[in-house]
Length: 570
Image (cartoon, rainbow, N blue to C red; front, side, top):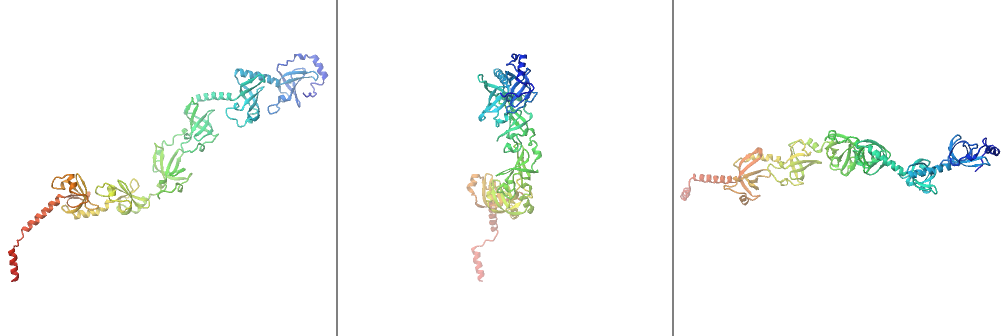
């Protein structure tokens, strides 16, 4: 030890010798702590007034902090123990380190035996970052895995900080041991979680901080517990990934949806803080309403349109334009576009809204009817034939529709009896308004009205006309008068004798031509009733009348003929 400098307290060895005679140094306790006051600070030593006739000398390095800093000044109090008296040079050697070690070891033993926490300061990182050295009065080893609950990314940040520790292992011989901070944190966390779970209720709205984000949701720390906000509970609107709405470190307000105390899991929601926008959706967006909306996503079959957060509908590719089906959706809209659309259909229960862009313009069929009117005869091509109706292409993107009942005035089983796909036909416009499917209403049978008028004017009841057998049923026989005119022979008018359908099928063949007599005509209903048996009766009657007429004429004999010849010669 370096010899202390001379000062006003110790002038020389002779003065110290006199003091020794006057004071019995044997009364100094070498085991008891002594509080002293720093009265001088030298390069390597500290002069401490310990209440004796002479001062104590303390190595300055014993007061250095963990980072070699010196934070003491003259007048500060320091507790030390006396080590020995240097009679020759006249001072008492004291130590703070020895006292700290002694008291620290007692503290460590007590903590270990009673399983209680002890306060210590992290002073050094060991080689290869395997752990820390912690000053508890005595130095203990803190493994890196026991320093915190979470993985420590920067060990240097913990240096110089004080924490509570638990002693997990001791070596009395070397006065060393292993400690843990993690077990205390886990106990604290467990108790905190227990208290927190007891204080939370489903339906509570609380604040938290986003701690991590995954593909399926975001974890939010709410006072030490991580609760999960599932992706579906972040927003009423469409989100492809939670990062579209949340970031790590964001402070959020959430609603507790479910608490599982046994599994210590909490389900959270953000959108549940607000009313479901679909509740009054039918009042806000009724079909036919025009609104400005934002394109959020484009797919092959259309685009998804956001009316407001949580309310999204589909703009189908077929509703982009009246000019046929586009080759791609991007020809008309792009993600982020804000555009006018019209609500076409709404299903509140299934949360589906159908929107249209082309509906904002006049339909091609409406434009067509501005140029053509009801009763007008127009040409078109048969595009498609169904069981009960036929679609006629009238113009580019303009279709008309003929119901089976408007093809003929008499009953037909299929439109294919009269029409073929690809055939060009003439039809009549039946209305100045479109039908429920926005097609032009057309008719074929109405073109034959003139033919019917001509028939009723030309053939009165009693007329005999040629017909073709078309269909045989139990009630009688349907006959074709022309392509557009049909008549019916009731079973009682088929024959003089009683006849069955079997007999009719034997006596008549489909497509066979015969004569029939017009019995009654109903022009308003386009009905004609005919008779086969009346033809026979009329012809018999005509033959009889012809025969009787021949009886009233003079009879010419052979004699009369000879006389006529003689008269000629004369």
